[in-house]
Image (cartoon, rainbow, N blue to C red; front, side, top):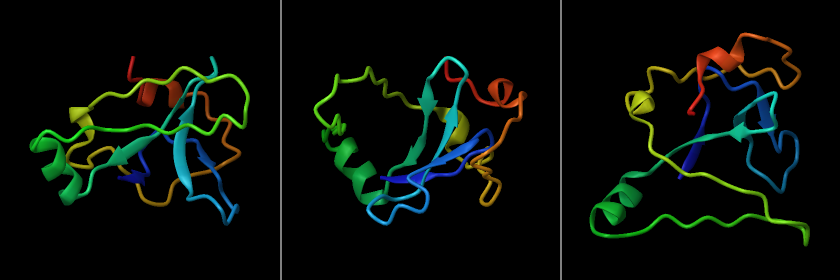
Length: 102
């Protein structure tokens, strides 16, 4: 799976940290952080044939944080994806209305 940029992404997690990939995300005021991932063709085939999605979260020996995985048809054609619009210091108040998975 590859993380992808999307219209309401307002932060890049792991930016300028060589041990991590850049992770575009939408950070909400209530503390929720949403990232969007695209499956490779190989992964799509694996899932179609009964494969599963696995999640590994680094807790650094702190409490495990709740997570939620879902499928979003609104991004299947990348209509919401923008390639170079991320601002890690964005204070834009309208982002919460652009993409809210619920």
